[in-house]
Length: 350
View (cartoon, rainbow, N blue to C red):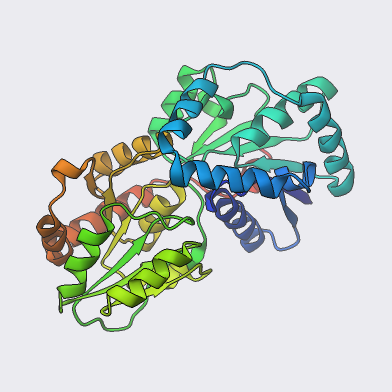
């Protein structure tokens, strides 16, 4: 069986989700031939790097503009460059000859759906939504099955005309490496700080200064691609360990009692799988707001919505509150226990 997974590098979340889906398939169906394709790079190999750089710049420097664009695009009905991209999809299908096509990026959903409708393609098309709330670009009647993180997302899809029988609540797929808890003995509390692949950390100086002084808390900050931040930490915060981009995030997360982070969909579900409570700071991007509401509603951590509500003393108390930490871990376990299978192959005969 040939399975094609379409994704993209708008941040690292979609790529990580695609790799987790591949891992899940192969663990249950070792004979499956699974290929992950960066859809934008396949269609526009020369332009894709510039487009991804522009996205990073927009998220890093112009978040308000990013949010306005996201809201505006939610009302658009056109699909730009459709005919050009259809020719690339034709080549894609000819190259990989898939028995199942999977996507975890809204762009892929819209372009592949329009191609499927135009060419009357009979290959099953499954979509994994990588946030709790949904943008219009995720929605298409040409999708055969949807896989979502929570019932909130399922309800939104139903309101948009998707049959409930075609929606499965499986959590957002993340690598199984996050589920393997370390058995090593810990002395004191351990904290990881993550700002996503771009290394975005709100209230940086306040938080780092406080944690740097706490002798009972061991702190690691994952700076991602932000080399400037990594250098700053090493020069000014001697008691905090700074690392750059790493493929071994699970090792740090599993060792931690708390993760301080921006609430990306993938990061949220990595924390859930690792049973690591979240301390979420000032969600700003459109998709982060829905993820933060989910974290607060399900009791998965603490959400600080703005600077006026942030007290560094509350952060320290939360990290050291073993009873609260254990309560959140149990909430995460209960949530995970209710998920359906995340493997798309399990549903092919359904």
